[in-house]
Image: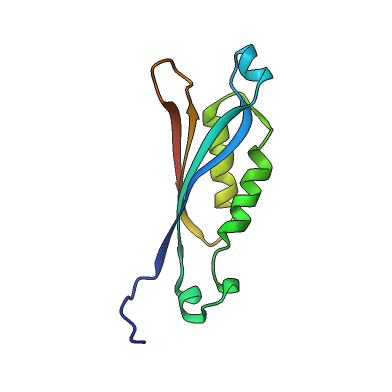
Length: 124
């Protein structure tokens, strides 16, 4: 196959990861788990993965997702900002990740609103 692209920057999106956590500062929030919806977008250089066509040459987004699930599911966080920062830190622990954006929604956090979300980004 002819080489068409010189830029092998891959954009990976993990969409609508639905987990449950204790999130908030009110007594009801401290005592009851709530849904959080996590969306992650990240980039990495996929040249080796494209060339070798082997999983060992690619960024393993399954591993990243498992780490996030383990960290978030059932745990306690006072602020959505802190939770978002911690998830972004997990993503950025992977040296291959060049840029990442994490957005976490807390459905029905405000009356009359579908959700409230916090979004943070990081890059190398």
